[in-house]
Length: 149
Image (cartoon, rainbow, N blue to C red; front, side, top):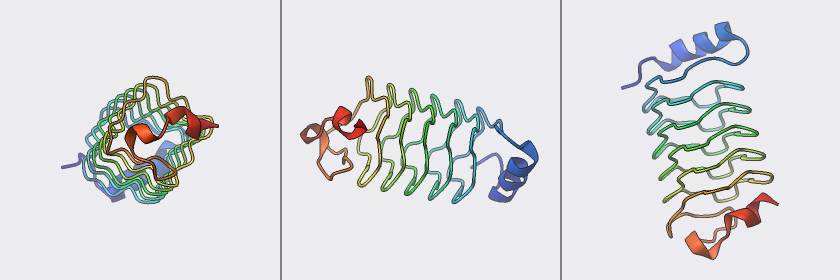
């Protein structure tokens, strides 16, 4: 169970102003649909199964987060730092990952259909044969670097 409710999070985001600090929080299964968390510090947060549909996480610090089986359809991760984050089984259909740092990210079983990865850093990105790339290719049929250009 999450440590806070969606309502409490929305109120906290308004009062926090720029760069809200949520590092280490348990946000498991929380509905964060369409929330604007630009510049948020979520380092080490537990975010398994969260709903990030159309949420805005531009410039956010999402490093070393467990975000397994989250729903991030249409989520905006522009220029976010996701270093070391576990995105196993995440649905990132139509997500915006432009200029994001995806160093060491785990994308096993993730769906990136129609995601925009232009300018992303994909150093040491890990994936398996069930990973779906932006063009619909699976696993090793696609090369992560090809989607960053």
